[in-house]
Length: 165
Image 1: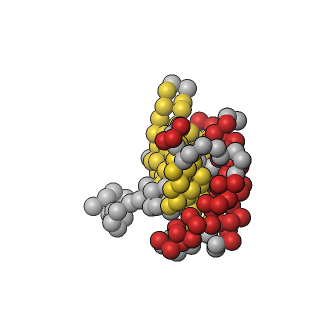
Image 2 (image 1 turned 60 degrees about the vertical axis):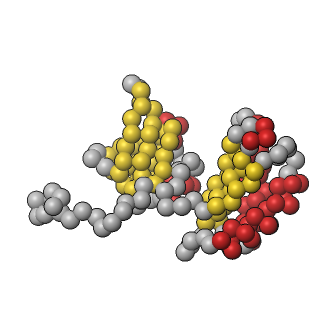
């Protein structure tokens, strides 16, 4: 585990109970960039969505904790947000929470990379199952990028033969 990974883990561990105390769930913590151009992105969610007051409350509550976090040295920009409609999937908990959603997953194969888009039908500690044109079982270790996909408008109607009209 690299320095950035250890820092993110320490920050996540420090912030999770504070965010929970505000009635929210800590969805993700990311630390991107280097030097003075680092951004610490804290993503929170709750049933029914997040409003600006919740974002403000989280920012005020976590700022002093982050200032005291020994693993987070140097300057950074704090960004608190909701995961949005199309959210990144990085952890097994993210995948488990996205069951039933349409997802797009890019993953390594024996011959390069592949992408699958479909419904996430299952997820456990080792990987996930996506049903699109075919059924794909993908190990988390092979995933290079994954996100939920928001489908605009009503689903396509199908005829009795099962084709779109």
